Length: 233
Ligand code: DC
Image (cartoon, rainbow, N blue to C red):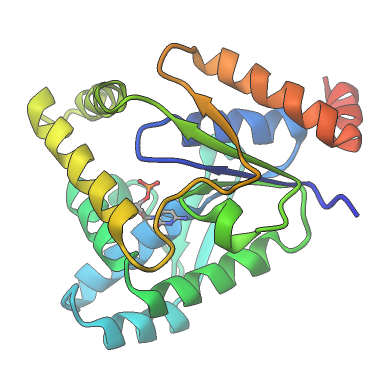
């Protein structure tokens, strides 16, 4: 049975969020930014003063918090225990803290359980690092979206500048490299491509081109999704 689960994984800056939102909108699906959930947890841990190496306390925190993602794909609000953290979780110290706590096995177990619950009904686009390998290994379509390191760092650099952060490109390049290493080298669900995922490199493609390529593949593999897409146009 086709549930309509689309998984997009890949490294930071590969364009997953941008294309994931557009895809969810085109298909009329729910959009689940799984990284936002690790970010919300990191925000809560920092605000409670929990050390980022206290695995037991962080696991316990992950098990008891309530995280919600609400609103349309292009205007998702993220809340943890009723507090809106949508903007706060994009700060650089949260990016760093999220990648540290996401390496803890107990934290991942608790967050993955929430993601499975949220996506259980299907008709969802998930994006992250392990959505096609761990969260929904039986997803209907899996993509692995990649881009060259310099291209990803350049995108991040432009995003940060647009947010008013005074940073150098070299600094962002270093941060991106460091996060890549942590996400790929951890022992708990490291970033890797699922065997049945479709690899796309977005370095030389526009956002629209990536979305169109994905839609072509989805139309082939999930005829019911494309008929709904046509109806909603
Ligand atoms: O995609 P992002 O940059 O918002 O993710 C924040 C951090 O969370 C990132 O360093 C890796 C981690 N993450 C993860 O381990 N598994 C996911 N499915 C999504 C994100």
